[in-house]
Length: 424
Picture 1 (cartoon, rainbow, N blue to C red):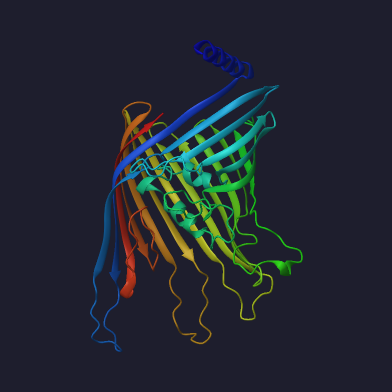
Picture 2 (picture 1 turned 180 degrees about the horizontal axis):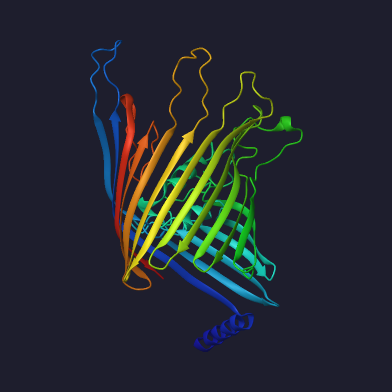
């Protein structure tokens, strides 16, 4: 029996060697003690019609917890490549999110990435669930890598801005299942059911990709056979691309993507979010600078324009300025980001003298330090503060929501992470 097992093992090794294949197990375990708070204030006062109004002051909601992914996202993955000869290779990548703080969320889905690809001198064709083209600039040009309380507001606002308006007919029973990563509510960060093409890496520093994601909704002929269910005709479709140049200390890239986030077949409306962003970084050695500008437009297209006009577009603009400074075995990180919502509101025709609400705004300052104990293990600390204006309600991350009942208005949010990250 032992000889048979040894022979089988030898044959397996020989088969792997002859095919020149490799399979790698990798992962990150990141845990932090984190705290969050969100403070709302009553900005109202006594008026002529209500002279006895009593101001409620402020209400602060706060929470402390053992969290994960404060520096790098916790994950467990498998990737492999087979050399097919002639410069051609086949690859796979399966990467699962894990919640190591409680151990409940494990390898239940490969929601972070699940792709198979074919690459060669022509570039790479990649199929499956992967990062969207427009997300890359948010994370690559953020000193905090869109992780933890330091995550820039451009990403925070844009990802919520582009959430699906309902799920429609989902093909997966895992949508919105507790402790299982939801893959059906947004394709801003990652897109499912995608086909992507990547340029080859030997273009003198130029790189890029184009990407299309299927909505996977059923079409009916005639169209009148379509079930009267919202978001079951086009929602989930994504098309985008990103092109950049990286050479020495400079890296610069522009991206554009269009995501269908809602539709109503019989009403004749399609809701899309179109996003353009431009990011860059330059490494001077003693300091590395980061920057990004972004603009998203939430559009509601009508097959037949309503007589009184449709809902106006909602614009979201934002920018980020960041820096990292190496200090011995450590790294100082800091960023400032800001966003503004423009709902393009017009004067009320029934009350033309009424004031148009001011645009919602928010800004965020974050600073942190990472101390590398080795190439794989690091300690980190981050603190951040968000200031909201005119009704914006952005927080620093996974903390409690603002209390808005009784006329309270969101104002400031703070957060901190103190943790350890180990990679393998």
